[in-house]
Image 1 (cartoon, helix red, strand yellow):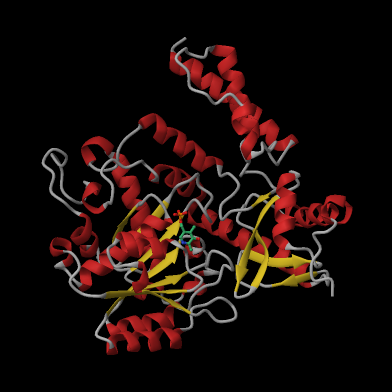
Image 2 (image 1 turned 90 degrees about the vertical axis):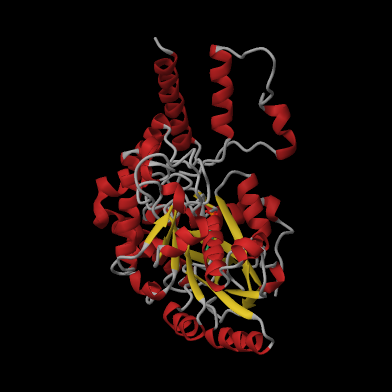
Length: 465
Ligand SMILES: *Cc1c(COP(=O)(O)O)cnc(C)c1O
């Protein structure tokens, strides 16, 4: 048997192990971080490790790696597993193309472009739009910022910064905005964090006030980042009202839909990003709401000229055949680029757009289940609002940080905490569309049982009013 066949056989065997582990033990056997190197043999040595020993080591790694696809994982803005997307991703590993040229990627170029074209249609961008697949939502935001910078100050590409450019983002927006401003030469202190209202949405009057202050000081407002699904509360900034401002002042509007931009697929929830067609760029992570394996991030640009203006470069050693429309390296950040499109295409092709809509709607329905549960139970204090797939709450007077940590350390369920204004709370994310109502109710059941019965929790009660 060839190496490949026997390794694929081993792969299947290991996947069986993983799946049965997930069923029997949905939260992984946790290894204390400071015990890690003592517990599993991760060492790389001069001598090869062979067959059974190799297999057993891999099994050890598998069973103790956090399980993100089970019905007790709620910690992150991704979770679950879409098998049709896994099929595509496994094929892309086998094919091992790089997405920069038609010469090496062939039809994969068309697959990527079809996803971009259909996504642009759903957003409502016109025929001049295009996009690319960056490494993630942070990189999408970075590419948007660089395009905004270059559009406002085209000399900047050759001469470096000549103007004091200012970026705006809500106080609740993703942390990549700060880092990106530093990478793009804009500077972290030239990002203005605009206050969010009580529901976590950017306050548009504050945005305009700040723009006017900056203009009066001779600074150059250049970029507004609006968020469709803030990382903690899952709130949607009012895009239509923000677009009124950005159009008035000639500022680039980027909509960061990394978390909840997937609502473009849903007739029921698309209204949450009303006005998105007026933005200059929009990004979403298919590895979040759509459930593809990490990473699968897409940035769309209303006018593709901006993408080429900021990211193309001649390279005769690379671009040797076919036109720019087929050589996607002309509009990407990277040179060699992983094929993140095929896994999304296999999912979309096999489900249809209507199937993707069901995935999105299911997440909101599960969120309603969770919200109804906490709203109708006086043991809970609720901090999030409707139309969000992040349900933020506290249980009794239990400190949320202690509770999340204890649930994780005792392998009960994996959930995180967040904060908004001065409150800290548990954040349950209903992003795993394979979950059903019972899985959500089960989360509350196991959490409550743990809180009631665990003596370890004594002393972690706070605010005993
Ligand atoms: C997750 C997230 C990002 C970052 O995306 P990555 O793919 O993790 O880099 C950016 N913005 C928002 C709102 C997010 O939720």
